[in-house]
Amino acid sequence: MESARHTVQANGITQAVRVAGPPDGLPVLLVHGNGSSSAFWEPLLRRLPDTLRVVAPDLRGYGDTETAPVDATRGLGDFADDVAALLDAPELFAPGARPVVVGHSLGGGVAMRLLIDRPDRVAGLLLEAPVSPYGFGGTRDVDGTPTTGDFAGTGAGTANADFVARLAAGDRGTDAPTSPRNVLRTAYVADPASLGADEELLLDSLLSTATGDDNYPGTAVASPHWPGVAAGERGVLNALAPAWFRVADELVAVPVKPPVTWVRGDADVIVSDTSLFDLAYLGSLGVVPGWPGATDCPPQPMIAQTRAVLGRYAAAGGTYRELALPGCGHSPHLERPAEFVAELLALTEVPTTV
Image (cartoon, rainbow, N blue to C red; front, side, top):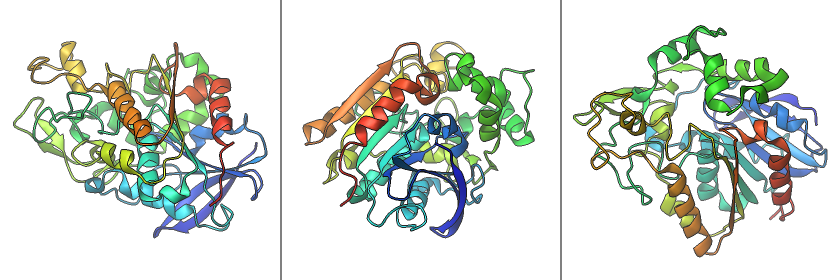
């Protein structure tokens, strides 16, 4: 498939959208993750059949979409509302379309929120390395119990300051582990060779991230608990924090339960029970000093949490399938495209109109 770029006014902002396939094709909505844009889906689009109608927006503050502020106190609600508004854009979807929604990382959380808010408009979910339904960091068990009352160790204050500065400067170099290119090579995939000829496209996508208090990473607040920071009320990393994003119970309770497929890599270093982006896990390795120990501040069991919540979803009348790809990192659609396409096409076999 080849995509075309469109600009749409929806939910009060200007959204840039990639569109591929015929208007009457089986609808698919692709929601990218943090530190990327719709361009991250281009390698996948080349592998999809032209029977699909694929819509891939740039989320607010990414790509060419308006750099609108993110109200973190709504969790990922701002992003979900933006995406929901696209469902009724006649230039994108046929009337009443119920797309299969594919969400990568942060986009997986957006997809969960979209299903909760608009269950009648989602035909299926393909969650690719999704954020836990209990948010990112600051929880201790499969039930999402807070490690501290203020979810210390989460939000914008956990971001690497050098990475943020290099991102804002548009750094394309390799002179530091925290350069965007090196983060792309080491964190987004398990094997940098999987980026192939698309590395510059994907780096462009990463560098399109708007930085600042209202976007990435957001505002930080002090905490009396280790490591001394907690989530603020503005920006992306705060919107992912469990203080504001906790959708497990709502997800289980949705009245319409489309099938869910969860695809992840077992070598993912971002969304993992041993995440290198979880300060509690880094503390256990001695990377962040002063860690109070596993009793007070265990690493977040992200994978176990998602599995437990999806198990509850299935017990409440839904269905889900988990596919863990060996040797694969945070981006299965880039690293293991054949398996990923097969899972997506299997979900498109479900009815897609009301």
